[in-house]
Length: 258
Image 1 (cartoon, rainbow, N blue to C red):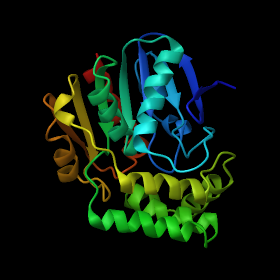
Image 2 (cartoon, helix red, strand yellow; image 1 turned 180 degrees about the vertical axis):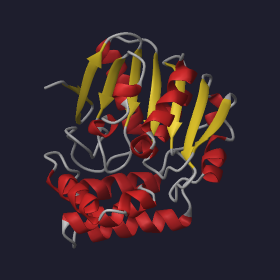
Image 3 (tube, one colour; image 1 turned 180 degrees about the horizontal axis):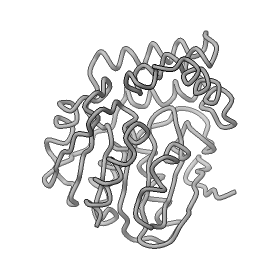
């Protein structure tokens, strides 16, 4: 099982494919498997998939911090002997990618963020409430509530589809526990001070035009201090835009990284 030790954490990662290296960083409540719909559509690369602290098969005790997750990414590049990579990050993973580019500017060639924006007070309350509820409601019901914020209306047109997705999420072998979700939410609440004006690479921000968690305005706001930043909205997609519109997302990524 591919893991390496970084500080107190045993960090899980996977590598697949060949070519120029591309590091993919997942968002909150998910792990490296979240890229399944997108990878077949990307140009041939060496894909490097990491499980953040508090998700998947990465193991660490106690509180976690965003800065530690950023350091895990840099340490993984050291572990693999890679000096410089392209990076794609979704949601929390997009912020981690920005922080990696700001704090380790020589390690990131180009960066694509998906659904990464400033967090509104409303969203902070949502995360805290979802964290609290995860301890008290059945997992399938919790995921059904979470999906309201991840997907747009067509996902819910077929009740059987919603039920099957919730059952799959609830029975996933490495499903994030309520405690681990709470640790990630607490880390997001504490935040990480980072000067995005020091990001030296070009950054492409993709946002779903139907995203309730990171609407296009919040994406623009988060990236406003990045010197070389462009923004491309993805039509008819909510927060999980790489699942709802994988072909459109892949086209933007392939063109930008080419």
